[in-house]
Length: 548
Image 1 (cartoon, one colour):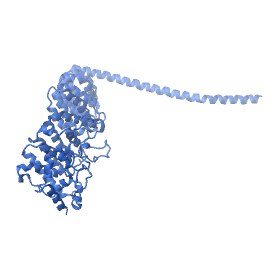
Image 2 (spheres, helix red, strand yellow):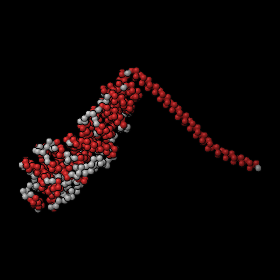
Image 3 (cartoon, one colour):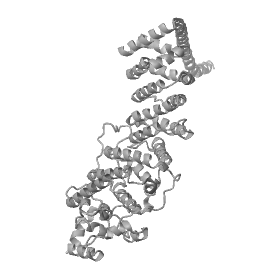
Image 4 (cartoon, helix red, strand yellow):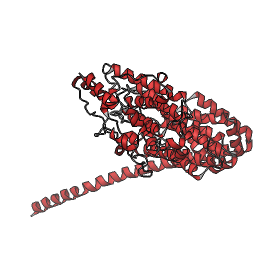
């Protein structure tokens, strides 16, 4: 009965039976397309599919209405206002959309070229339906129809059959938004204490809807890179609001989704030049919130990979805006505890800046020293590795500006009881460029680190650290024997002074203990004295009474 009613409905709209209501959705004006929207603005989900076929009614979904008013701008906090309300964020008529599942659409190759545009709109309309993948037994047939339709759309966009019209842009972005832009569930480690959670050891959460999401992402990627996509027209639909929603998806726990997002956002950055400053600013704001508020985000590594490619393309000389981005966004990313998750990408971005402008080396080194870890040895090893990469691109003039604070920190690392930290610090002398910088400034560096080298040679518990320290010590001795002897003599004098100071301190404490003990005895005597006087007085009184 339901099938007859749906067929009659379609026949009334189009006597030829080609379901032309979706064609009018693509070809008509924005006002006529609005007539086909569901008045509730809610999206039909697969949870209502069974009720549709059994009762003949289309129930509204429980999903959030995807209206233009639902677009928020949490990243930029008002700095960038979202564009006007977009029709692609509203769902089409549920009756006309779900009717497409009962009459299979023909393949693109089976219709004339003139009809392919209308067929494209119909297939896009079919893909507005979002299914529930938490139950694999529900709507199996409809899910497979949508999957095949999405694959056909990918092939159509890839084939490049002609320029996309503005109305098709609207339908494409609407379909992408309905399928991709969603809220994520609470993270799987939501109730785990932050200090005990290790994202490297935790299994990532795979989205059960990935069989459809992957094809939608592939479709969006092919659409963006297609030569048939005119950037001047498409920028009105792939706008700031669209980009912000894409950036929000980088917090997905599914690494497959983040990989697609990384590629797509990079292509958007390359194709839509008008969006480039906005994308950089939006990414900066994500970093700010991560560093100073939440310290929780799944996509920092992927965003840094995009930025590495962007930084590589910066023109010289670097703009002040780009230098501020380094100082305010990239260097503070060393602060969070989870830096190990994205340190490789962050280090590459930092070194890209130094390759562009070697004068930034002093700024970077001082930034590393500012956020240098105190109690986290593994993080300290990462910092030492990055420091070596930074020093490889540092010129002598910039090195001299920061040599004193830098080698004070290195000296502390040399004496670190954690053997990996001490060993990684000593590995700096295996780099020829660093050795040449040290040799040029040995008169400043050796007095700072000499005591650490001597103490390691005398008593470090790790044999590898002891051997590496001996090699560095011999290198300095060969570079400048006079300076080495001078530092050794000063070390012995300082050692004697420290020993004498320790003896004086010990002697002082001994005297204080004697004085404290004597005062304690005197206090006891003073407390006993009144009792003795009272006893004597009583005795004298008794004697006087007896004499009377």
